[in-house]
Image 1 (cartoon, rainbow, N blue to C red):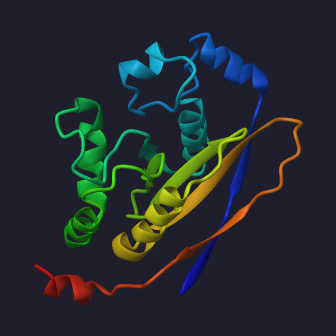
Image 2: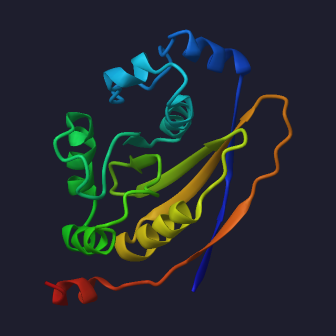
Length: 184
């Protein structure tokens, strides 16, 4: 079965990006985890944190630093995100996902978002000439099918610049919970 993802477009003022590059991160949602390297690399992570701020206004919480796989196990900047994943993702489904993606390090979406009601959303964030890769589409498809979570793509458009949202087709196979109870 196919599932269509239509980009969500968030617009941002150029002045906010300029301020970010100059070190102003004051608008990051309160409580969001921000590793030191976000401050040390002023040209990176604006998109993830801007999207995170926009989703926070819609009632979502989340992280740009998480890991679905077993990569960088000794990197503490992923600890909080891994803890949230364990809390919100079915452990049996996650084990199958990890097994299928064991050798794949690329493609995980930029954001892991959740709500207190248990809703989960994984989001790939794009800006300017950045385009979604096949590895990212494949990962979104696997998240939707195996983890049974919602997925999305956000495009950040500078204010006053026209942008038409793209749509993406992903393969989706609904796997019932009963299938996972049998898999060991």
